[in-house]
Every structure is written in C-alpha cells, then in structure tokens.
Length: 145
Image: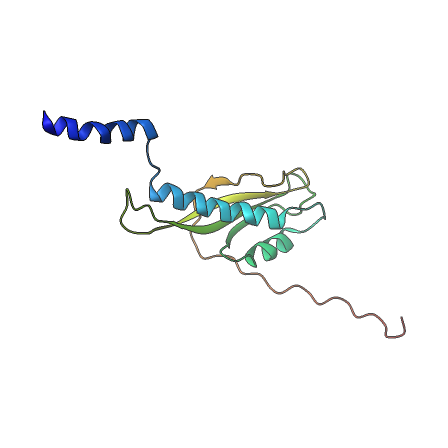
C-alpha cells in the first residue's frame, strides 16, 4: 500500500501533463524547421528555372538538395525541391543522450505557394546530394555605356 501511495503523485503528474515528446520527435521538428527556413529563402514571385532554385537551395546552411523536379517556378505546378536536413534534441527526462536525425522534405516553389508553407515529409531518395555549377557570368557591358 505504501508503494502505491508513493507512485500516485507520479501517475497524476504523467496523466495531468500528457506524454512528454520524445527526443526523436523534437529532433524531427528541428529538421522540419530547417526545411521551412529553406522554403522562406526560396519563396518569391520572380520566375526562376529549376537549376536556379536548386543552386539557391544548395547554398543554404544545413540543407542538402536531393532532387529537383519541374522546369520553372512559373510553368505547370512550379518546382518541388527535395531537401535533406538534420535536427538534434536532448530531453533529459526520457533520453539520456542527444538525438540527431536526418529527414527529407519536399519544398514547393511556385507563385502559388504560401509564405512559411509547411514542407511535406517524404522518404529520402537514395544517392548523394546534387551539385550545381556556379551561375553564369553576367554579360559584359560595353565600357562606353
């Protein structure tokens, strides 16, 4: 009976506060936030090609571009960029170690996309991240002009 009395406050605390999110869930949320940030950086109304969007996304810290589909932000459904990000979390109550996860998300880039639109969870495609050539040099203007 004495043990039951000692466990009752713990049981009430657990039931009253709800389930504590796992470190993996919190790390996944941090990875999703990095993908959301990528969407913010890529957001805009200016027409861009898939290569321009992919190059821009690959320059964002903590973001790896895994796949780019579509031809232009203003053609068809726009461009989907699959990015791989990571997130870390530490929850001393449920996990004694820091947890780091790598997750993939689809970021939609189109004039119809919304600011801070939630990226979609997707399975990570196989293979290394894409690399992009540097942007072409701007044309030289005549000196006199």
